[in-house]
Image (cartoon, rainbow, N blue to C red):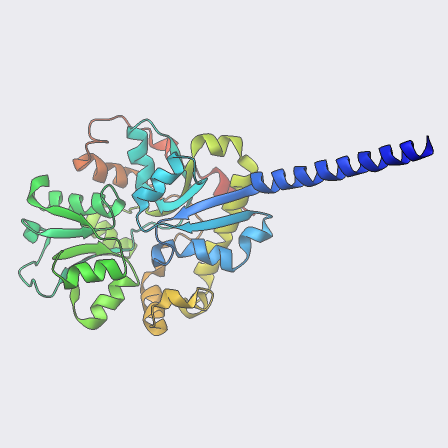
Length: 337
């Protein structure tokens, strides 16, 4: 009898321990948040890797995994498929997706300017403005991407028809550079550090600059909220606590950017992001870090500018009623610690 009781107690304790272990494992799995970044080596998406390297996710008790994806449109697809919980990408996807009946919202607005530049190959001096795009191949990160939206808008604003230009998906970094070197594209939209790399070699020059708020207003007619953390609205409603913690981490990151020099920020980034030229990386960041918001709050005139751009040519958005209030929220950034 004593043996049986001892055996029973042992089995019970083992069962409780196993259940506790299983529960802890399940909790850990549930707490893990996977965020896909539309190219985390791009300076426009710098807050994602910076937040991780500063330890701000861990400070909030979050287990965040960052995944890299070259084109924002592919990151968007991963979110809708349920493969990831969040995307660091352009806010305009939130507008475009609502037109398709999908509801996602920007939780933290990283930037109020695209941070993009339209580069033109120095082999093609005949291209002096977007009006000269007719008959040219124009590089974009991906078809349906934000760079595709903006490129077509610039062409449209210059009086060209959609069939007058061909947008070619060439990604960023080395693939973009190779496409321009091989004349597969004659101009293209890209970000830092790709911009500085091409300017340094003299293979390209800047045609349209959207790295600052003022330059963006001139090019697009208003501020253009771009890089952001966006999540499915249904996930936000079901995970208020986790969403708030993500907002806390990113608002702290934006404050770090706003209060530190480009050199200090660069020191926190992975060395391979410099692409062998740390000085160039720092210089580009010095010139472009003004695009970042200081607090993650959506600029008042931003959503309207984005809607105007998409309504101009996008078959998805044109003629649709878009409720901009459902494409972003300032609730979490305003409550951030």
